[in-house]
Image 1: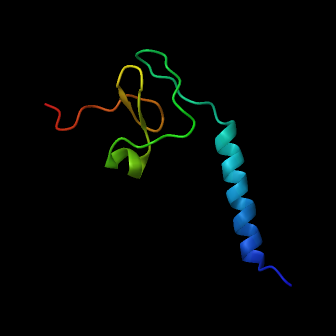
Image 2 (image 1 turned 180 degrees about the horizontal axis):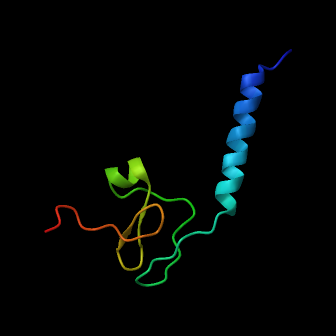
Length: 75
């Protein structure tokens, strides 16, 4: 049985991305210092689409780089 080279490449690439993601340092909340979880659960559609977290300790919303997100509809 021959495995399709594209399938092998896709599995290898996916594994490489997963390993790199596990090795990257996790950001900390700039307000309280709480380390963000490795596996996140999006709190809203923006986080689901673009990444980011809501701090479990203080409730600050952070983007995927760990920087605070300005409130929606700002003045």
